[in-house]
Amino acid sequence: MNAPHHPAAADLHELRADLAAAFRWTARLDMHEGVANHFSVAIDTGGTRVLMNPNQMHFARIRASDLIEVDATDPATLDRPDAPDPTAWGLHGAMHRELPQARCVMHVHSPFATVLACLDDPTLPPLDQNACAFFDRVVVDRDYGGLAFEEEGARCAALFDDPKKKVMLMGNHGVMAIGATVAETFDRLYYFERAAATYIRALWTGRPLSVLPDEVAEKTAQELESYPGGSGRHLAELRALLDAEGSDYAE
Image (cartoon, rainbow, N blue to C red):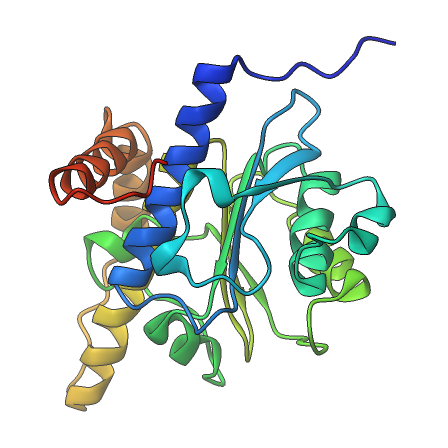
């Protein structure tokens, strides 16, 4: 059996810095919650050796060197002195074990996505261009079962049965995005929150909504999926802003 491939040291540092930057910007946008919520990214070809945030460290001060490396197939991880939050292990471990497409997993209780998750009908309609990106591409979980320990994590992972769906609106809980890279996943999480914010604010007006036709929503979603360079440039610009401020995120 071949040993799992790990990235070169320079590439691994860049991956750590990307994830640390995503933590910092998520906190800046107030999409996090206290010292809860978690991001993870795979570092091996098998997808089960992952970096994630240390237990109960605030997103706003996480550095690249603070990220812990865990094996999602090793239950002894929870016995380590630097063990991750057990709900991070339960949810993210299941995603990385069960879903090859989930190289990166980001879960937050961001304000507007969480409001949407608490509605009796949590469907995000194609109300604007951002919302179109998620047309027929969201897993809606209506069966919240408590904190995301291993059983709940496995249940959530099993709901990703359509490869084009890379966001889960977690009913009565929050939102989770998966993707191939940190940049792609953060971009997806960011724009879902933006779309949810527009929808919730539109509902606040009490006026009729102008919802786009399904065919226009699908066309727009496909155009956005093939749009060149968006997510990579987004994260690169955020890192440039942090660098210009003298942030220690990449240390």
